Length: 615
Image (cartoon, rainbow, N blue to C red; front, side, top):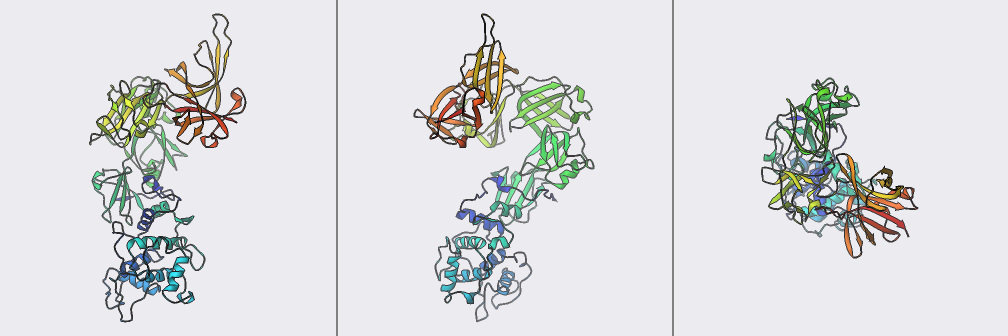
């Protein structure tokens, strides 16, 4: 097992989604996850079971600066706790630090349940509060002080009652955020980040997670039996691992994260220099180098050079963990041609032996990434459906015959017809001019796919759709504009018309001998083989209510496109419109006009342009 060390200071493991905890007040589950990440709580234990004195001593040590000092530190301090007892090291530290005490008969009673007052007394001592300085007698004084410090927030146990693991979840989480006798936040004295009274969970996970590692076979060598395994973000099993997968683990959380994310293509650039690179360009896409090994492998001192076919093994954040010789049959891409030209070599590809005779083709792949491939043959038309395979022997780009699929997408977006979408299914909407848009299953919920809507799809081993290429299903590939002026200076049979429009806040003009049946307002530009074929008017709607996802008008709800263009009107002509953000307008202060793509798309029907005029 080969270890790969980080270049960056922290790994954003919150990309695993289900493990993230935000800045809002931490719930019970969030607290439990945090304590498991710290090793204070063991994953899988029942939260309703009582906690013994030995177990509480272990929790105390795990929540202290002595967390790594208990191993091999046991000795026979008590008649009922021999040196070979699993908790002897923890108990010895707890006794020496004064957090806990034994009984006058020389016993510790390790298997006896710990009471609320015993637990509070121990935590107060860990915070530095002298019991002799507390007001009142034991245990009332300890319980009163614990309550004032917030230690008892969420704790259900009462005086004399045994603490459950759930009680300890709340007690120890509160300990981390409580104030010590010296005025510091206890968790910060251990090196943890506490923000607004909450433990920074992502930082905890990062600091206690080991990796990245690269699997050398279909089995992993781990120092524990994992309780939870994530494979590309979805709950899975260790049996899913494949050679060259990248993985991370957190023993405290009994969790393993496995990434099967690889990129194969031609190495065409290193930046800022080949001597000390921090990023590499493969298949026209730049990737950050995430380990010192990857940086060395791809440097001028390593084993690769420009023009080589390589496979990059990527980690959780898409960073390069390791570079290896291109894996045979590893990289197969599906997608639509964005552009293609023969002999279009660049400075970064002149080292390729046959650069001048090659075809350079950009393909929008089903994962939404545009990759550049160098291959033999002829240039391909934009919008053509292709598959690309890259191996050590070269790159092969070939046309794909269509593979149709008809059916209605379920209302929850989990499948279409009799097929289910695989976890992480890659869906790409395309048009005939090289336009493309990455689509997620939820975007298609309820849509009826028929005719030429589906160009191609593939199934995984479980018979689920893992890739799908669509044809003009969402309308998201089209350029939407706001036509602010039309100047028709035609005379007789001489047609001369110019259209001024705003796209993403920038004013542009189209002039020519074509007259389009539109007025000022929202519109869609329609291109064919790179040339403007027509301009289609969007449907105008008056709106009186607005949210981040939809707008209301005339008693009807209209979904808002994620990339909606919002214009603030403050005058006339193109100079009278200013691009703004959706969050900056509302229905109370502005008169709102939406432009809706009621153009027949199976999963279209979105407001593409919003114009806000101050009332």
